[in-house]
Image (cartoon, rainbow, N blue to C red; front, side):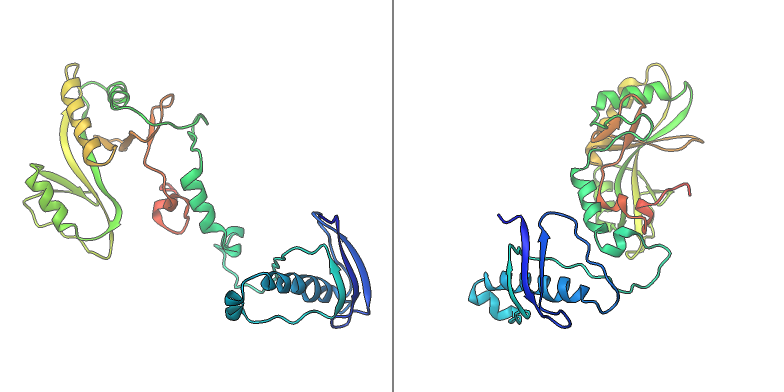
Length: 279
């Protein structure tokens, strides 16, 4: 492969039959006063010829949909690869814009982080790994004081639109009695209002407990039921304290913190799912 791009006899626009040698695989800056021919060399000669040659390498069937490109006014260009051009354009100013949103790589980064990123605990920095039901049960036993009241919930719907009438009927057929919809508790015999155009959170209330020394067997049964019902996630709601989420998928054993499954919504600052719940 050539080490240089060699341009001979470039006369495009206001270029005066110039010869240029440009090193490949290097950062090269073309500078000069307005009208000196910077764009004529970089865009109208180098980029245009790179694109033209690339299109010529395609099949005749593909080329008929792309149209033909005129050859720049130049004697020869050697060592040229297919070219990509990124131009500056005026953008509408928005105080919420970032480099990611302006360049349109924001959505790709969100997918990248959610699917192949390695999560780490925000407290200790260690890699987060899945938890077993036994580890979850032990964490609950260790974290809740004796005689403290708490509930075990299964989060069956998280931040999704719909009325979920069939789901509620199915839960009732399975023998469940109470649910929590958007923070309000209902029995499944009640008419539960839900707007299909608004995102909802639905938790099935599996058990109401008081922390005692002999509670482990009953707690284990409730935790297992919640994990099975909510695809590996259980919510523990301690009276007058913040809810704790435990997950078979992601947890930090050292800090006793569990996390919900990671998805691309968590990396969006434009929706509540990805925003800080405190600020």
